Image (cartoon, rainbow, N blue to C red; front, side, top):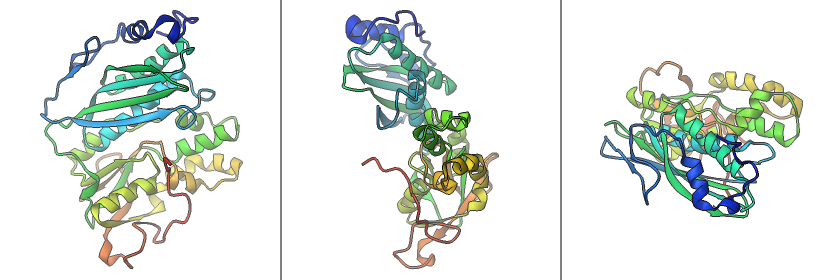
Length: 325
């Protein structure tokens, strides 16, 4: 839909005209009872409960417009929120979007951003049901996502138990590798560079894990060690990871690491924004999930001040994940 009015700015045509252009011709899924156009939308909640999350993207902190297209940014904004809904064992039904940008931003770029959001939402049959726009010194995108549990209990971080298998689905280390390539202006490795711009969560697998009896789950947004650590802390257990289950990820980024002189394990274990899913299971794993470790009793794992997560039996002394501040 981008490209119809390339010379118009957001300030030039005004908020409501921009919103009209962003929502025109968009088809909503069946969960959306009432879409944009009123003071609020109405979204069905067949389960009687609604899973809700929100996340922000700030230009210069979470994305760069000299690396990413607006379409890329739109996809990323929806994907990172949809991954959080997946991690609860739910499916995403609708999103609400707030967008801040300088007044001289072209309307075409705002429409391209919306196109990217709708592209990603279409992958999971979700709607974009409303939001807000405001003048800001740089681009800021805030998304709130709604999800449906279809009668199941949410899969929380706090349910892991000793003896559970720790498993992952999706890919690790790719976004961190892509960031390093962009940051160091290394050409080639197009798939890794693109993965940093647009994550690929394993859509639908959160529900699969819930149906298979997952006891705890999270998405890998901050880094594998950091996010598995959240499960360990919330569950009062320790988690013993094995690099044997992560070799496929290491192999995928090893060539880029060699060019940059980097340790690929730093990306696999500490890199975030891949939005793979990590869960703990008391029994057989669902198809496609791979074992990467076990849950152990904290009292039997050693000293009380030992690490919540070990790698091949030892504490990891490298990068453990993203910090927002």
